[in-house]
Image 1 (cartoon, rainbow, N blue to C red):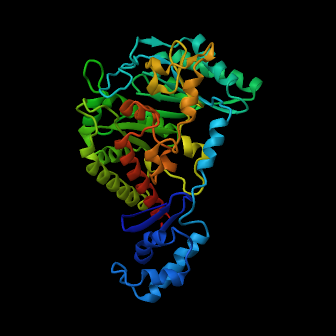
Image 2: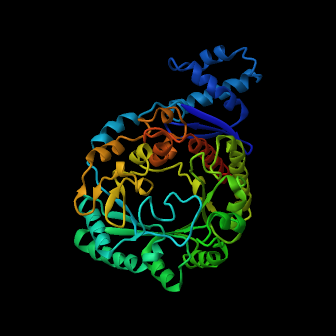
Image 3: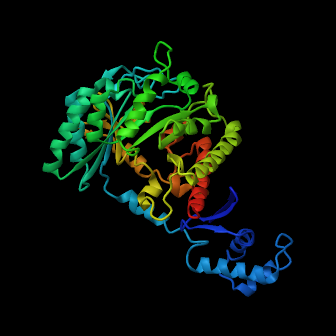
Length: 461
């Protein structure tokens, strides 16, 4: 299976199963799909292919140049870099049988928030329920559960999430201290992360976070008018002016690494590339701005009709990023970061984030859900931190969720990069975690194309 496209002056061919990327001239670009079609029944010689290609009106190239291109394509095929067979599907069966261990928890340290973001899936931090703060006792039991269910894994991850985690900061600090006390006796290492809107951020919190948090996610949507419209205080006032100086201090204090400013774009700012560039102009070098996921009833929801505009935005952003990198003013955009040489392991490529199996969310009262986006949906209540997993059927359902369980993914060139997409989005739009969120899929395919183009361009710098 191949995917070919033109981007920013490059002719790009992706061999999906091998992961090989080829930047080619017009001749090779034109003949590759024809050679794939002609060799589908078995390998053919250059002579046989030349005979088959002779007289094709779309191939108005001299015979010598055409033969050279055919030979080049056949060499790539022989090297396993074109028309490679799918060798991954058999891994799925082993993957389904593997012993499941938990390696990461999303601790809902606070089901409360001091902002009233319009698009918040957590309903101002309440998650379809009541406002609550996680107690230290529940948090400790969550870390104990993680250690006890992590098998031989040494590296464990804990994300302090909300609502707004800084509304329960003393418990966060105590849980980090407790986690550190577990590391030596159990041969574990905790990687703590923090997601915050920044309202309560101060020097004392930043000093602790820089010492203990492997990563900090800072929520900001971009330009002031966009951010303040979607992320106001409960009284309606904007939060941009308060948080920007704090976030700039975080970024500088961490040497422009180990953090992300993370935004959401909506139908209010289909020109979201301007928000990404605004954040870059503020001095941020690690940026993630993602499309909102909302039902069609929301006036800010992304619609299918918006896709052409958004795809153009991604193209424009990629081109501008390339220009800035050439000038020494580069920055990272999360959705354009792609590893073409190593990349995730096979299990990660097939099944994604591991929600419901390796990754779980914990509510303030200790209930376990497949991930933060399922919290509050009692159908997906898996157990609790005291008794452990009580619904193995839910775990097994998520264990079987992979790119080969989704018919749409089987035909998609981007499947080994997005790993089937978000299970929560699939469920919320189709009632089935083995479906796919179509708008999200279209945007992901465009992001992958832009990311590969940037890699191709970087190779020439």
